[in-house]
Amino acid sequence: MRPSHKPTFGRLFREPHRIYLDWQYRALAARGFPDIRIAHSAVFRSIAPDGSRLTDLAALAGMTKQSMAYLVGQLVGFGYLTLSEDPGDGRARLVRLTERGRRFMAAAQDLSERYEAHVANLLGREDARQLRALLERLLTALESEPEPRRR
Image (tube, rainbow, N blue to C red; front, side, top):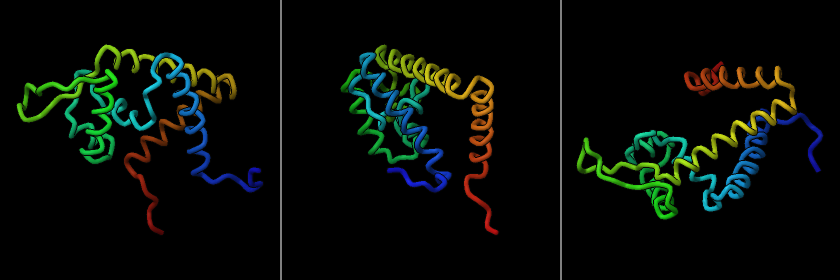
């Protein structure tokens, strides 16, 4: 049974995202990517089209190099990524998408667009457009000022 009180601001952020992710990862599995987990998104959302250093991936994802190395190792094993020598620094390794990794990224993008269309069907096109615009404004504002000011 759900509480009858007004949902918290955090719940209003969290629950639509959880519902979306649950759907997206089921849909990805149905499209031939059953081994991808939500944790792997830290790699995919951070990787540059021409490859990224592991340390850069970790920094962008806000995680330790060891944690990122674990995720990258899994994805290399699953055939989504390769590791190669960084031509700019022989000590570093570049993480790159394989063809399977590029297919996964395309499928994830397609599903994201499909879900945005679903939201537009639920809310109406204008409300969905306004929601996107507000979320973009909020993201920009929070990136520059993530915490409330002290009173």
